[in-house]
Each structure stands twice: as structure tokens, then as C-alpha cells.
View 1 (cartoon, rainbow, N blue to C red):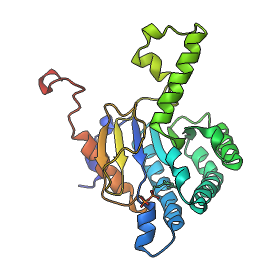
View 2: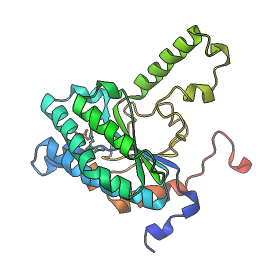
View 3: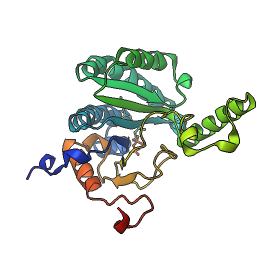
Length: 245
Ligand code: FPP
């Protein structure tokens, strides 16, 4: 049976988050500069976006640039920012044709002006699309997001807009960059590393984790199907016992 046929269409995760890791090592394997890996990583982004939308995933969040990634060599940071601008310009029509809405989370105003403007333009142009949200985590880190939320809560508390005594999970979530988006049910990391790398730390409290031993540029449609099938075989207990489910 085809892998796709093994997928239970009624149990597709609403939100899948991905740590696209291994671009640099993929390039090294071919004796090429790291940027060659990122360029080929974009092909995987395109394929997995289409695959996720076809399956009925509602939101796909991709870790495209972390707050720690600024520490990479300047040449690589500049190349990643340019790649992002070029990709968004090329792909925006295709996102519209496929009814996919672009969104971004992270400290976006600190991005280079051209990257920020192209991103905002893409978000604006696709804002009415409702088949799937392609959510790019850019200049993002989980700890930054949590601190940012706490600062806003402190401000609102000072202005008597919120009673900090009554703070709940649901209220806290409204202060996160993912407000209104369901938590990821599935988190995929490629490249064979077993780390969370400061990604969606609040939101993944109950996510199922899937680690693929494949560098991101090699991650194909079939690999995404395998992750979904694996997810569908898990028993999600949320602290309860099997018998209670
Ligand atoms: C991690 O691999 C990859 C990144 C930090 C960047 C991901 C960016 C892209 C795939 C291209 C742009 C994305 C979009 C959404 C248009 P790594 O460089 O850390 O690889 P390594 O661990 O092998 O060094």
C-alpha cells in the first residue's frame, strides 16, 4: 500500500511545526558552500508546504531563522535574508493560487528592512486565503516570545487592563505570537539531531516529537507522510491513563 493511503484522513494534525535542520551538512556532503544547502532547502519548503496543504493541515510553522542565527558568519546571514526575499517574491503567486495564507512569528521589526517589507507585503497579499497558514518563525526564539509576553502582561497589569492574580493558560496564550493558532500536535526535526533549539517552548507542551535522520534538503513528500503515519499511531494521553481515553 502507498504511504499516502495509510494516512487516516480524519486524524490529520491541525498544526505541524518543523525544525528544518541539516542544510549546512547537506552542502558539505557535496563539497559546496553552506548557502547551497539553504537554496536546496527552499525546494523542500515548497514540496512540504504543498504536501501539508493537500493533506488538510491547517497550519505549518517552519523555523526559518532563530534569534541565535545572527551569530552565524555575516555572509551566511546576508545570504539567508536575501534567499528569503527572493523566495517570497517568487512564491507569493503560487501561495495565492493554492489559497495559502502567509504569516510570520518572531521579533520581525529587527529583520533587515527589505526582508521585513517583503514579508509584510506577502502577508497582506495572502491575508484572505484560508486553506492553510504557512507560518514562518523568523528572528524567533521560544524564550524571547515568553519574555515578550511577560513584559506585555506586566504593562497591561500596570494599566489595570489585566488582573495578574487571575492569569490562566488561556489568557497567557493571548500574549504569545501564536495567539489564535492551535498548539502544534506534531513537531518534526530533520537531520538526526534530538534538540528543541528554543522553538515554540510554550506551545509544544503536549506535541508529539518526530526526529527524521535526513538532512532538510532531502526531506520529501514521502518523509512527511511517514511522520504523519507515525503520529497517527501514537496514543496521546495528556496526563490520563490509556483506560480513561
Ligand atoms: C538549518 O540548517 C537551517 C536554517 C537555519 C535555515 C533554514 C532556511 C531555509 C530552508 C531557507 C529559507 C526558508 C524559507 C521559508 C524560504 P543548518 O544550516 O543549521 O544546517 P547544519 O546544522 O547542517 O549546519
